[in-house]
Length: 131
Image 1: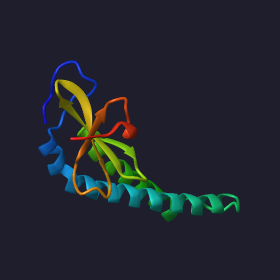
Image 2: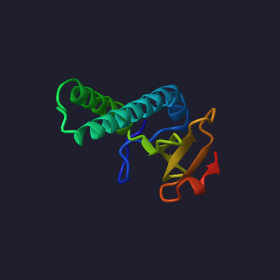
Image 3: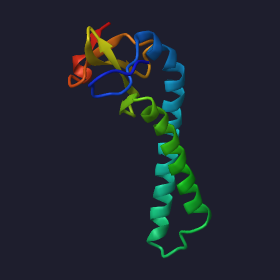
């Protein structure tokens, strides 16, 4: 990872560095999706109880807080490293990089075996080009 001059991102990955992080990225994605899905179920359960004038404290709210903390902790794994989680449902991830002196993203989508694409910062998924 390099840190360099006046760029949008403070951290830039080489292709090799980004590829080396893929096992961890896959793990974090699974954890984020699991936390989000469980959190949504707990929120639905709490919402259904709210209308019935039930006590919403105790174990149910504690579970909601714990799941929210798990979700935040796993999202922070991406944030701390300047790795961009662009679409959680698709598992779309961008790694800031420098290519030919220009700041770009190395692009990876869950289900792809390796990092094989890049795109300009503002181009998005549609602008992906083969490395």
